Length: 311
Image (cartoon, rainbow, N blue to C red):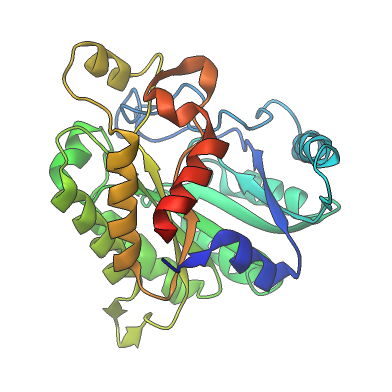
């Protein structure tokens, strides 16, 4: 099954292989700090999904250097591996949430580091202020800019269950704002398969929703010709979360690997030729992973998934 892979997409932009390096802007989230709620989403770890970031207490320059050294150490052990360019990935929590001037300084600091050729910023649909949006529009004219929106599901019922605290309309509005005001930004959406209570029909509806919103029509402008991206991961359970308590009580079970592969194959077939597939599996931190156990060996999972997709 053919689809646009992230590696090919990045190579078409940068002319070489590009590596994302995880950074922490020192942000929190509006459903952690009491603005909308507390506790965060039920699946979110204490690091706000930034388990592989260097840590927000360090300067951006120090985080970039540490992340680059880590990648370069891995490359030295690979035959024929060559270094490439880097995309600075502000991954932890909602990386557009906070003092906007201070955040923009951090974005610019990341872009000024040697070898960094672009930036990716993960956030929530309800956390993109006007100043940030204006910066995204300007920055995308001079460098590669990627914004990642956590949606997880288009089911409003599941959204309440996971303590998402934003609506599908919030997501839809964010997509239209970004695509209208900052059209050069590459927009990526996160989905999770296997959330409690969701069946195949529900998960495929989320995929269709993302596809249709990103090719939508608003104010007389069609976005159907623009590339967008998607990240899909299986739901995994980590220690210290509400989700782990639910799992221990037997309130849901995680997807088996074969189930997940089957769902992915159906999902990819729905996406169309304007979608870049950024991820088809997660990379859970092994030390705190509760389930599913098959997700711990990412390399093996990716090899098996590739064979399954080609079959």
